[in-house]
Image (cartoon, rainbow, N blue to C red):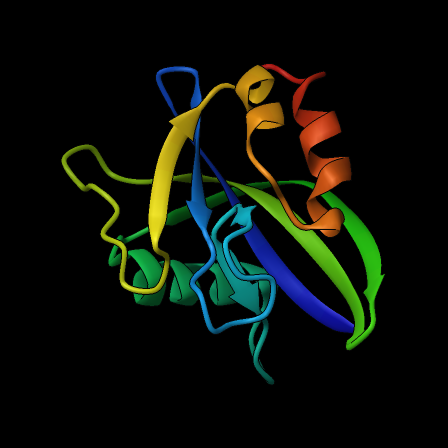
Length: 129
């Protein structure tokens, strides 16, 4: 099973989501930024590294919120969601993704996410951001 760290980045009651690039698995779908854990990394270390690579931000990885598992044709993935803070004045830059948006949990129904993220989106409807 592949371990993935994902970020719940919240600002002013809105969640940061990003659109996956064309030419990669699950193109054009929206996701919570993050990525696969490399050997020797903890999940928070993975998330900090991935957010620096993908968004050029110095993320502060906070509390673990939940995990969910999903089996795709190319393997099973466990998505581990963490609350993440980006320092004031830092804006995410799109180094990998083709688009980004700040949305409320209620607005997420207007975006197409990978199947593995559905449980996360349901959970976000029940928690205080």
